[in-house]
Length: 152
Image 1 (cartoon, rainbow, N blue to C red):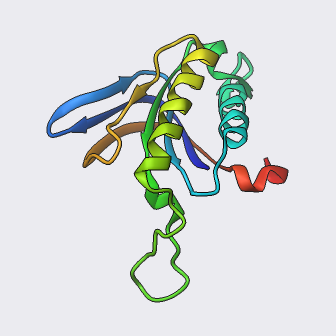
Image 2: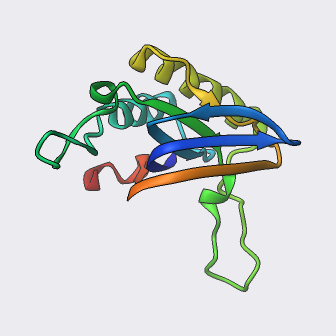
Image 3: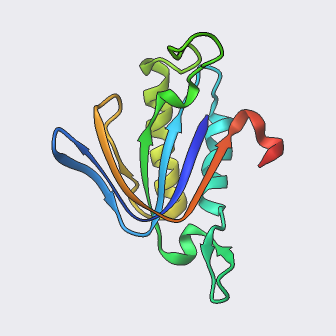
């Protein structure tokens, strides 16, 4: 799994002009799922996301986690995070999981984040043509990959 985590002061997702998910302070997360992903990847990533200390404390240092600032999460499925661009100019998405594998893991991630934060995770619509709006606070953007745990 790959996640692009952006610290935001607000974020929303629209599909067909309708808001499907909206948050204030928190994380806007783009989540990519690949065929090789397992429940272990999901558990590790969810723990890392909710424990990530990238909100400012009273001294202006990034020392507070999502729960410390009563933050929320907007989670959007993003298969293009597994784009392979080595050959040619048209990306290949062969490593991205097909919907029959990706949808259950995406839904499990939503449940896990709900449980860890004690809040309802806002979402996009899996496979939908989504329009994302956000105000990246900082900007602070963190990329995590469960296949590269040693660097996180």
